[in-house]
Each structure stands twice: as structure tokens, then as C-alpha cells.
Length: 234
Image (cartoon, rainbow, N blue to C red; front, side, top):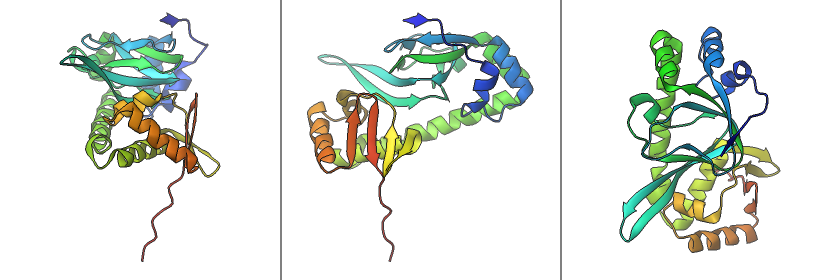
């Protein structure tokens, strides 16, 4: 579901987004002039799996998750592939190659975007080298980041994968708070479990143990994780 957005200035917001910081001010102003503000409520679809994105979505307020529906007997299984919070470029390759998206992108909370229509995006990339280079570099970083997530899916015990996932989210999106970092992403237990290919029951049990140990605190708005102490070196 969509609604009008707050008064946000694209020319001010876009340079703050990772992946667009190296674009020249002149090009940013041109992008800003063509981008449209958009607000989606919680659980709104930015992109639907199997469809081509209408444009490049730049998230400036809020958070989203990437989910994929995999057809497998006896029914469809929906898995959370990744999560991210503002400010960021929404990762969907369909806007570049015009092929159906391999996953859906759904808001975790009410979120604000700027949307650059696909045809305008491709024209600007062909015209301005700084934008083309910046988005190419961003795609490379996203590819490397996706490869890094494989450890969270397959490496070690479920406990190790939970710890790896939380530490990765804290490093990427955490805000310092006390002796740890607060991950301001409203993730439910089943979503965390889906991200590491584990059962909700197992992840809930492990998180409960971490909470009893004082290493984790969960709220409706996110998760606080105690900072990992560096290992001593001999």
C-alpha cells in the first residue's frame, strides 16, 4: 500500500546514500529532478518476484527485506534472503536488465523512497559516467556481500549461524548503544530463522538463551547485541 511521503528533498537525501556518494553534484541534481517521492506502508511491495521493477528505488527512511518464493513440494516456501535499512539503493537487478525479478522486496515498516523511472535511469547512466561507475561499483559490492551471506546459511551449527547473522547485521546496520549495538530492524523470529535456513523453534530457543546470558535484548523495534570482545593474541 502506498501513500504520500513526507517532504523530503531528493537533492539533499540522495548524496547520503551508499552507492551514490561519488556521483557528481550536477548529476545528482539531474537525478533528483527526475525522481519521484514514494511512501509505502509496512509489508508493502517495492518489487514483486516475477515482475520487472518500474524503476530504481532509493530507500531514504525505513527498512526492507528481500524474500524469495521457491516452488518445492508440497508447497511454496518463502525465504527471507536479506534485510537492509535506509539509506540505501534497493537491490533489484531487474531495473538494469529488464528481466523478471528473482525476489520480492517488502517493507518492514513504513518507508520513504525516491524512485527513478527505468528508462530515465538507463538514459542517465549512458549519459553520465559518474552515475554509471557508481552504480556498477554498488552492484559489485552487493555481489560480494551476497557471497558473504553464504556463511550465515551453511557454515557451522545453528548457534554459530545465528551469531554470525546478528554480528553481521550489527556491523552493517547497528547503532552503538551501551556495551553493544542496536540493530533497528523489526525482524521476527521466523524471519531470522529463514535467513539462516533453520527452524523458528531452534532460533527462538537460542535467542532466549542469549537473552538470559545478557548478550541479546529483543524489542519490537529491533535487537540489541552485546559487542563481541576481540580475541586475545599471544
